[in-house]
Image 1: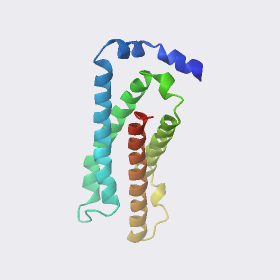
Image 2: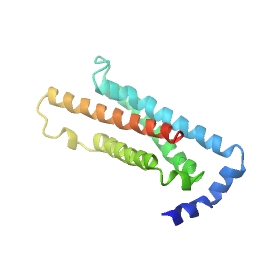
Image 3: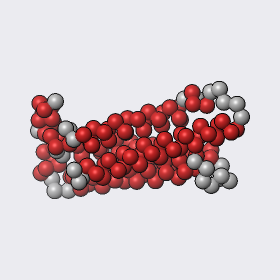
Image 4: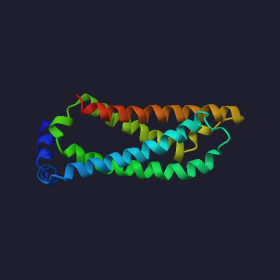
Length: 158
Protein backbone atom coordinates (compact mmCIF):
# COMPACT_ATOMS: atom_id res chain seq x y z
CA UNK A 1 0.00 0.00 0.00
CA UNK A 2 2.83 2.37 0.84
CA UNK A 3 4.38 1.77 -2.61
CA UNK A 4 1.08 2.62 -4.32
CA UNK A 5 0.71 5.81 -2.28
CA UNK A 6 4.30 6.76 -3.09
CA UNK A 7 3.62 6.18 -6.80
CA UNK A 8 0.47 8.29 -6.63
CA UNK A 9 2.48 11.03 -4.92
CA UNK A 10 4.56 11.43 -8.10
CA UNK A 11 1.90 11.62 -10.83
CA UNK A 12 1.54 14.48 -13.32
CA UNK A 13 -1.73 15.49 -11.64
CA UNK A 14 0.06 15.79 -8.31
CA UNK A 15 2.73 17.94 -9.96
CA UNK A 16 0.07 20.28 -11.36
CA UNK A 17 -1.63 20.53 -7.96
CA UNK A 18 1.67 21.44 -6.34
CA UNK A 19 3.10 23.73 -9.00
CA UNK A 20 0.11 25.70 -10.23
CA UNK A 21 -1.09 27.97 -7.46
CA UNK A 22 -4.75 27.88 -8.56
CA UNK A 23 -5.10 24.16 -9.32
CA UNK A 24 -5.90 22.93 -5.82
CA UNK A 25 -8.26 25.82 -4.93
CA UNK A 26 -10.17 25.40 -8.21
CA UNK A 27 -10.53 21.63 -7.79
CA UNK A 28 -11.50 22.13 -4.15
CA UNK A 29 -14.12 24.73 -5.15
CA UNK A 30 -15.54 22.35 -7.76
CA UNK A 31 -15.67 19.60 -5.12
CA UNK A 32 -17.55 21.92 -2.76
CA UNK A 33 -20.02 22.83 -5.51
CA UNK A 34 -20.59 19.12 -6.11
CA UNK A 35 -21.18 18.51 -2.40
CA UNK A 36 -23.52 21.51 -2.19
CA UNK A 37 -25.56 20.26 -5.15
CA UNK A 38 -25.65 16.74 -3.77
CA UNK A 39 -26.55 17.53 -0.19
CA UNK A 40 -28.70 20.52 -1.15
CA UNK A 41 -30.88 18.24 -3.25
CA UNK A 42 -30.74 15.12 -1.08
CA UNK A 43 -31.66 16.85 2.19
CA UNK A 44 -35.05 18.26 1.09
CA UNK A 45 -35.93 15.03 -0.70
CA UNK A 46 -35.05 12.91 2.33
CA UNK A 47 -36.88 15.30 4.65
CA UNK A 48 -39.94 14.94 2.42
CA UNK A 49 -39.60 11.15 2.69
CA UNK A 50 -39.43 11.57 6.46
CA UNK A 51 -42.82 13.28 6.42
CA UNK A 52 -42.10 16.99 6.11
CA UNK A 53 -44.27 18.89 3.65
CA UNK A 54 -46.81 16.04 3.26
CA UNK A 55 -48.95 18.03 0.82
CA UNK A 56 -46.02 18.43 -1.57
CA UNK A 57 -46.20 15.59 -4.13
CA UNK A 58 -43.10 13.40 -3.97
CA UNK A 59 -42.85 12.49 -7.67
CA UNK A 60 -42.44 16.05 -9.07
CA UNK A 61 -40.02 16.92 -6.27
CA UNK A 62 -37.93 13.83 -7.03
CA UNK A 63 -38.02 14.59 -10.77
CA UNK A 64 -36.32 17.92 -10.06
CA UNK A 65 -34.00 17.01 -7.17
CA UNK A 66 -32.68 13.58 -8.18
CA UNK A 67 -30.88 14.88 -11.33
CA UNK A 68 -29.42 17.76 -9.31
CA UNK A 69 -28.17 15.34 -6.66
CA UNK A 70 -26.79 13.05 -9.38
CA UNK A 71 -24.91 15.94 -10.97
CA UNK A 72 -23.49 16.93 -7.61
CA UNK A 73 -22.45 13.36 -6.87
CA UNK A 74 -20.76 13.06 -10.27
CA UNK A 75 -18.84 16.30 -9.74
CA UNK A 76 -17.80 15.29 -6.21
CA UNK A 77 -16.72 11.83 -7.40
CA UNK A 78 -14.65 13.37 -10.21
CA UNK A 79 -12.92 15.98 -8.08
CA UNK A 80 -12.49 13.92 -4.89
CA UNK A 81 -9.77 11.64 -6.28
CA UNK A 82 -7.93 14.67 -7.66
CA UNK A 83 -7.93 16.23 -4.18
CA UNK A 84 -6.71 12.91 -2.79
CA UNK A 85 -3.75 13.08 -5.19
CA UNK A 86 -2.65 16.34 -3.57
CA UNK A 87 -1.26 14.28 -0.66
CA UNK A 88 -2.01 10.56 -0.99
CA UNK A 89 0.57 9.51 1.61
CA UNK A 90 -1.26 11.63 4.19
CA UNK A 91 -4.85 10.76 3.27
CA UNK A 92 -4.47 7.08 2.32
CA UNK A 93 -3.66 5.69 5.76
CA UNK A 94 -6.15 7.91 7.62
CA UNK A 95 -8.84 5.79 9.23
CA UNK A 96 -11.29 8.67 8.93
CA UNK A 97 -10.64 8.92 5.18
CA UNK A 98 -11.14 5.17 4.77
CA UNK A 99 -14.34 5.39 6.82
CA UNK A 100 -15.53 8.23 4.57
CA UNK A 101 -14.93 6.09 1.48
CA UNK A 102 -16.90 3.24 3.06
CA UNK A 103 -19.77 5.61 3.87
CA UNK A 104 -19.76 6.95 0.30
CA UNK A 105 -19.92 3.40 -1.00
CA UNK A 106 -22.85 2.61 1.30
CA UNK A 107 -24.64 5.83 0.38
CA UNK A 108 -24.23 5.26 -3.36
CA UNK A 109 -25.38 1.66 -2.95
CA UNK A 110 -28.41 2.92 -1.05
CA UNK A 111 -29.22 5.38 -3.85
CA UNK A 112 -29.16 2.61 -6.44
CA UNK A 113 -31.04 0.24 -4.17
CA UNK A 114 -33.84 2.75 -3.59
CA UNK A 115 -34.00 4.41 -7.00
CA UNK A 116 -33.08 1.68 -9.44
CA UNK A 117 -34.62 -1.39 -7.90
CA UNK A 118 -38.08 -2.09 -6.73
CA UNK A 119 -36.83 -4.64 -4.17
CA UNK A 120 -37.46 -2.32 -1.25
CA UNK A 121 -41.18 -2.03 -2.07
CA UNK A 122 -41.94 -5.66 -2.90
CA UNK A 123 -44.42 -7.42 -0.69
CA UNK A 124 -45.96 -4.22 0.64
CA UNK A 125 -49.63 -4.27 1.41
CA UNK A 126 -51.10 -0.81 1.77
CA UNK A 127 -49.96 2.76 1.95
CA UNK A 128 -48.79 2.53 5.57
CA UNK A 129 -46.14 -0.07 4.78
CA UNK A 130 -44.90 2.00 1.84
CA UNK A 131 -44.79 5.14 3.99
CA UNK A 132 -42.73 3.33 6.62
CA UNK A 133 -40.25 2.09 4.00
CA UNK A 134 -40.01 5.57 2.46
CA UNK A 135 -39.31 7.08 5.88
CA UNK A 136 -36.59 4.52 6.52
CA UNK A 137 -35.10 5.18 3.08
CA UNK A 138 -35.03 8.92 3.82
CA UNK A 139 -33.55 8.45 7.28
CA UNK A 140 -30.81 6.11 6.06
CA UNK A 141 -29.95 8.37 3.14
CA UNK A 142 -29.85 11.55 5.22
CA UNK A 143 -27.75 9.86 7.90
CA UNK A 144 -25.26 8.42 5.42
CA UNK A 145 -24.78 11.61 3.41
CA UNK A 146 -24.53 13.78 6.54
CA UNK A 147 -21.92 11.36 7.91
CA UNK A 148 -19.94 11.59 4.66
CA UNK A 149 -20.07 15.38 4.90
CA UNK A 150 -18.96 15.32 8.54
CA UNK A 151 -16.08 12.94 7.86
CA UNK A 152 -14.91 15.10 4.97
CA UNK A 153 -14.80 18.17 7.16
CA UNK A 154 -13.11 16.35 10.05
CA UNK A 155 -10.31 15.11 7.78
CA UNK A 156 -9.05 18.70 7.59
CA UNK A 157 -8.59 18.70 11.37
CA UNK A 158 -7.09 15.24 11.90
